[in-house]
Image (cartoon, rainbow, N blue to C red; front, side, top):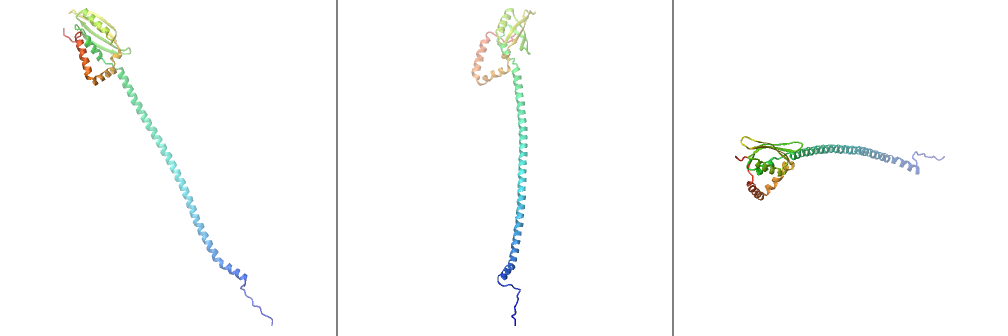
Length: 236
């Protein structure tokens, strides 16, 4: 009886082992693919977040730069406005000071002339009219008066001609009145430096600081002048 061969669909040996290995690795491959998909998804999210973060940082940087430029522009504009206002105020103040200085320098003080007339008027001479004016040529004075005699008038003329206050002094309109007094008119230019209001103020400063020496000097001068002069309102 011929031998019977039993056939089997299950491979044996290496083939069976290879088939078993292939069948067992299928779940492992699917698991790895799942892990790779999750990692790729996470990586995509992280990449997307990174891109948005980079864009946000770039936008914020642009915003900061724009804000800095705007603040710088506003600061420069404010500084320019402040400097312009300050400079304008300084210019206005300087113009006021210059105007005040010019006004003071042009202003004339008549007190030196009055002091001279009070100290240098002859006893028998009196002044009846006083006129002081100033123009482009300079200050001028015009005085009318009367003297007891021509001799008294000559003495008065000598004193006034020697005074540094007057330039080009002229006595005119000499005539006798009903009482025999000699009427006259005195006209002269006045030295502007001697009737300067500014210098007159400067002269008064040492007087305030040194009262005692000034008082002594004034007293001495008054005594010496009293022997030769008299006030203009001396009764006749």
